[in-house]
Amino acid sequence: MTLRHLIDECFALFCAAMLGLAAGAIWLLPTLFLHRQMPWMAIPIGWLLANAICQWVHKRAWNAAFLASIATVVATLYVHVLGAATTLWEMTSGYGLIGVIHTAGIPMLLDLARFGIGSRDIAYCAGGIIVAVLVALRLSRKPQRTAS
Image (cartoon, rainbow, N blue to C red; front, side, top):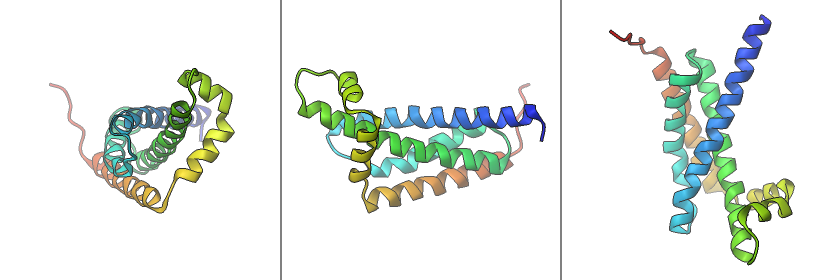
């Protein structure tokens, strides 16, 4: 393994994590709008992340599947952390959301998110991971189209 290959793989992991954070933030919007948790969204998020990773981040099948599963887990955890932050924000008046996040701190938000995760959330996250892996493997094995 060359240094260039190692840097490429680390950058692909970084990109997958950033895509997962973006997907988690987008997942938060309907959650806040409807005022309830939507763990079933892990399945379409897994599909979306697998498509994005296969198209833009990594072309090799098992690497793309691994990165898509990591991104799905990151999105699921991030939506729970943001959900805990918005719950605290609703309880406190006079603070902005960023102020609540800074005051509470990441360890407290992670603990509150962990308390809020149930078996249904874990099951849907596992379903999202399975969908992400299957889609990434299928898309990576397809012959690539060339622009004509």
